[in-house]
Length: 168
Image (cartoon, rainbow, N blue to C red; front, side):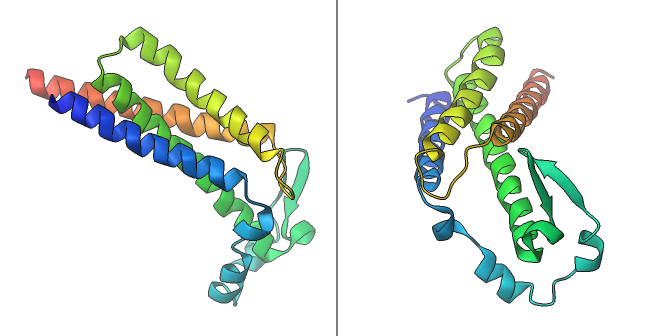
């Protein structure tokens, strides 16, 4: 088997594992996923609380602040949203690697990648709508899609730099 095919199939397996993990996770109620008990133990002194008290914004039409949800919910919010962004960022990179390994045309890569990963984000939020204690949010789809798009762009840049180095 060619090196590109090995990379492509390995990347595909990794992407499918990540996708499966995301779908499993979105089927779990919030109570099974909360990391607040861990935060209460590891951040018992509530570091930076005085600074973070001043931060307040709206996400998905809901206010987010320490005053609204408490210190640990506020921290958990950022961890969960960073996880959304990061996972889709990684998925974007892996997806490009798969398409590149199987020599998909560049124009198709540019169109297929963001659309496919954004549709996956939509289906994940839709899937979440059937789970007790979970709220599907368009804001999460947007965050996921931005993460995927930036991962796609980074991998395309990496592949172009690598190609230029091989040619010189």
